[in-house]
Image 1 (tube, helix red, strand yellow):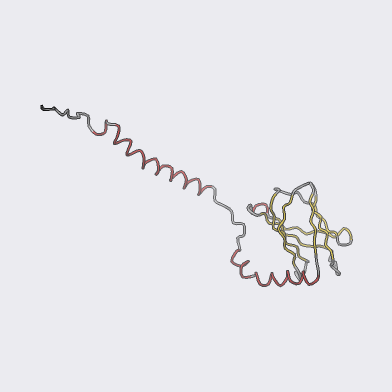
Image 2 (image 1 turned 30 degrees about the vertical axis):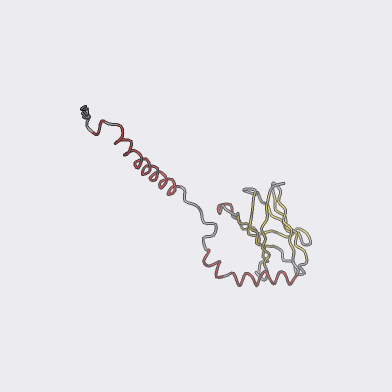
Length: 158
């Protein structure tokens, strides 16, 4: 018995499988180009632009924190919809103002440096609107930078 094999008379570019096999890697290339464009247009912000200098200054910052511990300084921060209040305990020579840096954990555009004014014995306050609730790195200094209190806290307007 003899079988006749039928030959395919269609050219390759009119058949399904070559185009299907070409389409697979072409899809990956297009998706990669789109991903690259999105990444270039939405660059992540650096939480700290001076991370190298901050890394070098760690030892001096530790000394400031140790000074605050030796003085027995403690601080309590509270926020509401219009102000931030700092209650500072165990500080003998209370300056007229206290410097507070608030750094958001992930969004550097929300970082703020505030100068809180003394309104009562050990209580400092400043007008403040919390840009975003969440995790914040808090740094509290006196104006002469002789001590520093650092903390991580979840701040909200409640």
